[in-house]
Image (tube, rainbow, N blue to C red; front, side, top):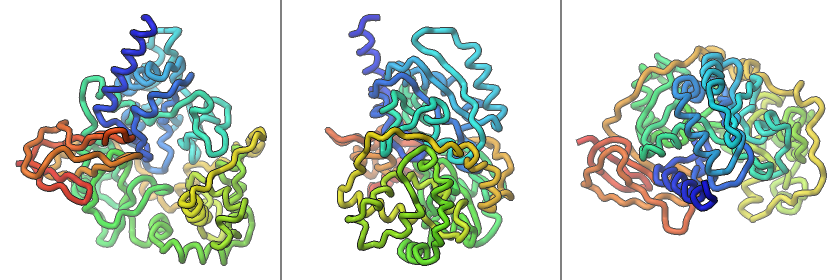
Length: 453
């Protein structure tokens, strides 16, 4: 294949990914066609299923192996990568066996080499900087990205959606884990835009009267204000918990109050720093020191800038701190002030050396689940089918970048897969498509609501 032919083919793949509205399904929602324009040596498939209780990625690796690998190959082709490494934990034995079998049957090609990497079961193994260090033995620069080391990291469901995009099938559905205080914990496929209340009903309904729903994992997910909120392209899980559960209470406390308590109670034991994944990689992040940065000092203090390195993984808050306060929230508040003032991290030329005790300080997922009081919900959530929604609300912004521009009007008839939101001209964004057949009921508050006729 000539250089020109290769370039044309790559552009065709990128165009299909863009037209399908594929975004990072792991939580951030970066439009995949943007990431796929990189030029790298390695693509890492993030199948760590990093957060406790989440099971949709292992399910896809086990049952949709061919499609995930097809999507991986498309991204490798676009980026010029010669290595594709599928990373998942050994505890997901069925998924591991399926991937191992598929990779062993892959024809040997010099241009596309597929590998399997078995991860240990610790949190946050799926943090992309941690993943790069585990698999490639390299440390991403402070405030940097894997691209600087010749790698990109892609989520399992993102690659599954890339494969569908090659068949001109846009992103209309999402696989997610539903667990906690529901009658039937499960992995389920739902149309994007389905109300959370409908998903909970499909899972047999809540098993208690007063509850909150965490959108995402227990460590980094957010508590929904109500269950009328729609599922988005980045919704990985819905975890229903009692209102007074330890996972919930820290997420709903007033941030200003939480910071006052944290600054007052902190005993400067440094456990948050000792167990901080970014500090263990050699990054200049010391959460215990940031606890002493006052509001009035944020913009002037060189120390405060360390907060820009925080991934907000929550280990300091939910696992390390013996006083049960939140260095994570303090870091997040400091980072918010710095970013609003356009303060950036000034990288140094120093060599980043991982802490020699890093392996010993890795937080086992089993211990984390116990600490979070989630052992009761640890039962394996198996796939239980596809939900058929009668009404969906499609957010025009389910991704990093500009919100999509609505291209439909109330009263329009649409089919599943029809375009309802287009990328604004000259902006970074992602398309949005109808996830059910129906009639456009309304366009308001940044959402397109569709009801079956």
